[in-house]
Amino acid sequence: MNKKSQKPVRKNSVIAAPACRFWWIGLGVTTALVIAVLFLLQPRSTVPADFEPQVIGAPSLAVLSSDVIDHGDVPVNQFVESTFKVQNVGDKALIFLGNPLIQVVEGCCPPETSVDEKVLEPGEVTTIRTRFTMHQGMDGPHDFRVHVVTNDPNAPERELKILSNWIS
Image 1: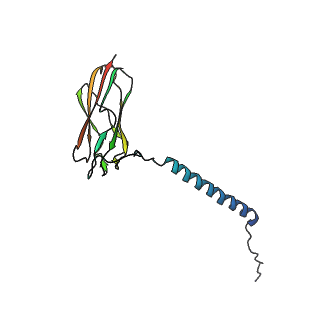
Image 2: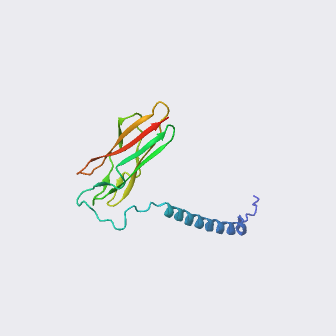
Image 3: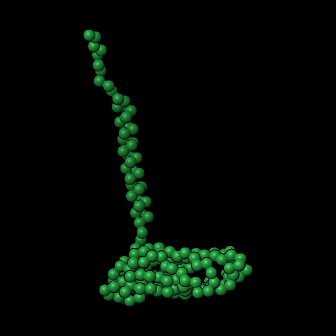
């Protein structure tokens, strides 16, 4: 039986060691960058520094901006954006029960609405928004009522108003 001499297999340890070190350094730098980006993308608190609850024992929705937006005369095919700033002025979490619904009082074609944050802790602020346009044949006055439903026990539904007059 002829045994071949078996030498220990030597991996390119001289080459692998420096590459391994660079890999660990690269991993450390990448991890640090990811942590920095996550920190920068972290939402900032929307609670004003001087916030004191106006309602004790419950959430409460307050409209910080005007509760009526009048876009006036708007040329057809031009977009308008309506934004309402709202705040939880209670000392309990305020929860939006779905997206606000739009009632058409005059005109046609109600737009979709959204709320930036569906849950507001005491003092937090968010935005209710909608963006829309009208085209030829949809001109004339439009009166939309935005119905905001929350868990505010004193005013579970708030009504906001969006007015516009579309001209050709």
